[in-house]
Length: 222
Image (cartoon, rainbow, N blue to C red):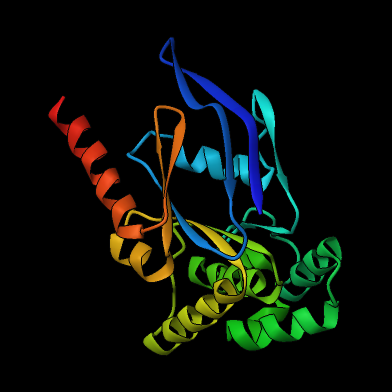
């Protein structure tokens, strides 16, 4: 369960206020994969950052009775001068998981070979993405945050990545942001639509998508 209590956040953009969250009280239920939908500029990534704890709201708070992941695929926590293995073991200690078990999983899953023991500064973008995704999947969270995750590598690696991700969110909850409605339908059973600083919940993902598309159409018609 992730609960937003009186959550508010406003930015100033070109001299005008932009409200992302307007005193929101809302609970993301446990064990449900929920799409977070909203038009461009509605504040989806800002909302995800507040849920992840990397951005402080103006007022209110986010509380949870379980563990919440960083956004899956996020690479900002890695140190470029440490090897893939050293970065993985460091993150394992931060999250209190078995360092050897996580390192073994990441080394096997990422398929980085000898590069796993090389500094991150030598990695290509695709290699960093593989490492980041593997670390995300190697730690069990009660709620996974997913912000436009993309699979990298060949077809076999993409299938492997999709299968392990579906397995993880099958036993946990997830909050998913994606511009692909096909991805949303594949990963989510319910949805919330962020519009004008408020969240509207839909048990049926297709109903959530329909409302989101109406909002997008209304903005386009203005």
